[in-house]
Image 1 (cartoon, rainbow, N blue to C red):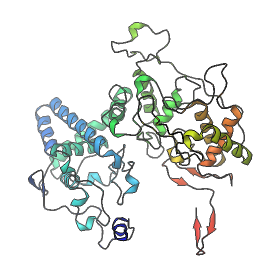
Image 2 (image 1 turned 90 degrees about the horizontal axis):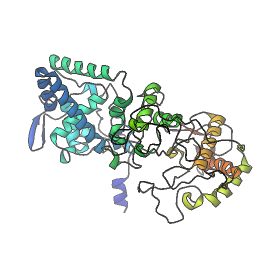
Image 3 (image 1 turned 90 degrees about the vertical axis):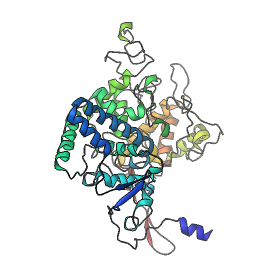
Image 4 (image 1 turned 180 degrees about the vertical axis):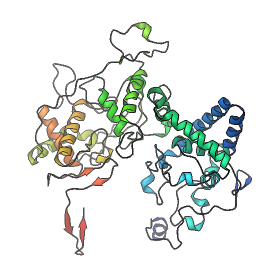
Length: 481
């Protein structure tokens, strides 16, 4: 057991060899039962596109779009877990690796490399690196065992296209042509809005008709939202009402932590402007086949043969879940909240909110997908709840968001509304107890009421402690928590 432990335990010691960020590739590469000369190897798919483009512009661009689309599908079925939804090296598994997955958005990395270099790295993965490139074990798989040769070249084309970059090409004429194609692509995307923007950024997950069946959907937990049923989990509108436009906007802009839904408008790394995000809202509403979003007096001629509403005068929800009766955050409400939580919430979330379900039930959402209760002690998994404000304002806004989630529930999941959704019915949990529970849940995530300057999470999901506790270990060393 000791020998096995020694073999598998991670090491953070500096390597004996001097690591090279981009180690020199070998002279030749043997994959796909072929031998490639990496000094002269060029992207055959790109060359075919350029040859076709020189003869027939429309046909050439058609081949280019086909290659990029094929590469996109391969990427989101195989690569995004590590390299991220946004190709920024921040996939779900990224933080568990050393070295971490490469950031394809970094203009100082990919554009400085030849496509032959990328072909070598993708096809041979971590085991194909020379000693100088592997001070730690790279988790990059040997993709030539799983992907066809053209799949690899298409993925390379997609990576450059998605980020608006071009590879290093020695032939000046070819480089000029490829750069010209890049400039044309970026010019088309400069003011991209609405349905075109959806196809570019959203379709791969949410599907062509918004049914949550994109090429990446089967590989995600939770699955992407199905817009066709007009059922949304995270909203601030009361009861069973549709979400407000602000709810849809905030979900797109801030993303949903702990899922594959990225924050498209996060400050400092926004890929979409506020105007672009707003242009997606009528697109999302337009996928509805339940006739929930069209006006109640919509004419039947405004619907096409598939049941989609063809106009844009969708309903706009204004009502907001009331936040009256808020109870100030202090020790007494927290204690009352703990008792109320264990009475009303522990069957699913566990006695201490860790998501360790006690009922023994197998929970599923309305689509039949297996789901688990939220571990409330991990605020980085709170979706559309954690405020990004600072100090006491952050605490107050987060408590309000918890209260709202508790009152409304999470539609489409076993998380019920704890306020009566129909007038005249009794609240499953009275108003005071809902505020008590909200205060307690805020504390349960590890944010003690020891100081008004509470700990918080950054937009990037990094712990940013403001309330620090320092204590002495048995060895007399100072440690910071």
